[in-house]
Image (cartoon, rainbow, N blue to C red):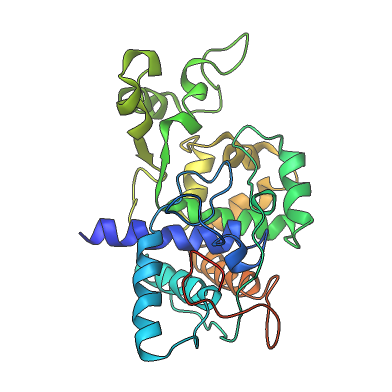
Length: 277
């Protein structure tokens, strides 16, 4: 139960860290696609919206149209960070919800996106390269579906089946958890997922960077930070100093909570986080 609670809640940390830096908080929670919140292509595995629905419903019973969905997401992110092992950080209130929702605003780079393109993408959203490295530490918790990284095991490029950056022992273990997709029923293959952190999967810590240095990370877009000279030194620093990473992560989270914020007479306070008023 604790694992489920943390994993469901931590997704909203990732939402704030990644999705919300691209668009105002509830542009990522805009008009629903079917019964779900707006989830752009590439974000299909973001889950836990029902938790936000429940929080919003209770707040509307007590204080109608007082607390925005944007604030709920920001507070959920703070609590997710705390539940996952880091100190609570201050989160200012007063955000308002967007009246628009564009799928094009919340698409994310793919794990195979060239690193320069990833850097450019986040720079345009006000995220520095150092902040990108620090916020990537959120990948010390949660899971990735096999389909996001299994090409590194079986079809890396035309000359190498397996990504040479992968630790061989780690790769062998991944192969047992993510066999070739054509060996599994399609429905089962889609459900297969692996913890980002093989050692402390329920704790938000700097193990992400230790794993990077050992070639034990799932996403190629993360692993490249070790070999790129612009980021390799910071990866080593964060791997060796957990307190430094914790401080910088909290600072970056606070910055994210102030990015693209609507206040005062801008936007609205939604009655339902899945739809506009």
